[in-house]
Image (tube, rainbow, N blue to C red; front, side):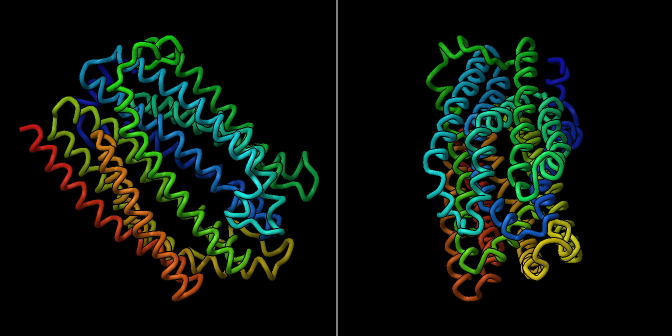
Length: 464
């Protein structure tokens, strides 16, 4: 993208078109990556083995933590770069980019080491039983211990590219890895590896796909660094200003904590659901995959919105910033309400896609499906509230409001969602546990909207 095109997108292009230009490639990559994450569960479900599905549910929580680490320097560094470009500080933005890149490598390797050393006790805490531990261990070794570096680095790089206007290139990298995984999954699971090793095959396919995506991202970062405010040259780290590092962490840490707390909440959910049995755990794992469809679209909208809001916040164009925020909110709520209706109507056929009743233990599979249909119809009611939480958080991140982002994350997960899990689980068992998402997200959304209003009014006063 040429510099003039980038300025037009951020400054003068009609807001709906600008959001579409940034969000549509991001949504496509989100959906393709969602599909490839679903593919593991889909193909494992073809075995009819509910215990394999439960194992991947447990292991997937550790994989999802990689998103939190990629957000630390991806959203933190990316939003800082966007604000610096809006202020005309392109040279300093290169230093922030290089700092984010190499810091990501350090944190990814540290996470791999941590999980490698403490894998078994961590999996037990997450809800792995004697029936699922072996499968979960196979998946985590390849996808998390070995695969954290390419996974985190590719997602972080996508954020950097997106925040300087290269949304299409970022999406190609992530989508390409997702498509490759879709192709490799059945090859490794049902052709190259023997029966009983399907989880290992799925993990190997995911690892190779993430490595391929990472290689593409490195090539693209090196290419666009010649004409943009990005850099992956190690010497460019030197001379970075302390205030710019603070700007990265001010947004990046709350963003990472926001995602991390979401994963912590899922840890509690898995652990509490495991008390109701491996089949209930497998069921909620299936539901969490399906309900990510509207979430993926809405996160794509928010990620497309963020650079435009950050740029115009920094450049002082408040009218364009507000128009971008309101337009994105309208789109996201529309998607959420449509998905709610579809999930209520098609819960049963959607769930059956992910677990065969004609292979393996049919009785266990049918019980798992029964749980999943009920859980889906309950949890999908949370969809519009979830979007409002995402949208508000991304707005505050775009404006560099780290404290607001952090406060929202803590209240949403620790004050509302997790306590509701324990309360409703005690009152109504597994169905109450599924209902906790609706209660937690609704309360979180009300708090988020009030917080955003207060923070924006505060910033108005600061500017006067």
